[in-house]
Amino acid sequence: MYYLHPYKALTSNGTCVRYVKSLLLQHLGGGPIVFGAGDEKILALSGFHPEDWPAVNLLSLMLYGWKRGDLDLPPVAAAPVLNERAFAGSPYGRNGVDVYFDFLELKTREAREVTAFYHRARPNVVVVFLGGREFEVAATTDLAAQTLAVRKITPSPHTPEGAATLKYSHALVFKIPPSPKEFMPLTRQIADILKTAASLPPQEKRITKVEKKSIYLLHGGREVEDGVVLDNDVYMYV
Image (cartoon, rainbow, N blue to C red):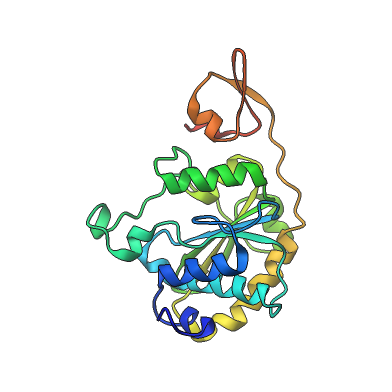
C-alpha cells in the first residue's frame, strides 16, 4: 500500500499510518502529529479508533486534493492519525488497542501536542472526523448548527469536540461511512461546509482567574502572580 498512488491508497479499505504521515509531511509540512503552519482557521482531527480508518483516509484525501489544487478548501491544519497504537494493534487498552484520548486531562503526549498547537493557532473551528455507518454532520454550538443547517449535539467535555466547545472554537463532527467509492463526492460536500464554517467568529468566553496548576497552563492559561488567567471554561471540568 505504501507505494500506491495517493488516490488509490487513500480510497482503499484500510489505513497505512506511515503512508498518511509521509504524504502530509510532504504536502503540508509540520508534524509529526499536527500538519499545518499554525495560522489556519480550521483544525481537523481523526484516527482515534481502528474503525476510524475511512475518516482518516477521507481527511487525508481532502488535504492531498487541496494542496494539488483539485479541491477548494479554507486553510486547514490536521492531525489525521492521533492514535497509531489503535491502528497498529497495541496489546493495551480496550479490545486490545489504546483507543481513548482525553483532551481535557491531557493524559497522552499526542493530546498535549495537539492542544498546544490549538492554543497557539486559535482556530475558529475544530473538525473531528469519525468512522460511521452513514454520512452524518453535527455541530456543537447554536451558531454553527444554525449557519450550517446541521444537527446540534452536546458532547462530553472529555472528547476533542467537547473540549473545543469549552474554549473559543466551534466544533463539527463528521461521520464517514466505510465506502471508498463515495469519498470523492463527500470531499466536495464537506469542502463546501468547511468554507462556510471558516467564517464563523470564535466563541467569546469570560476571563477567569484560577489557582496555579500546570494543567491550566497547558490549556492556554497565562500565569500571573496569584494564579492563572484563563479565557475558557476548562477549569469547570478539570
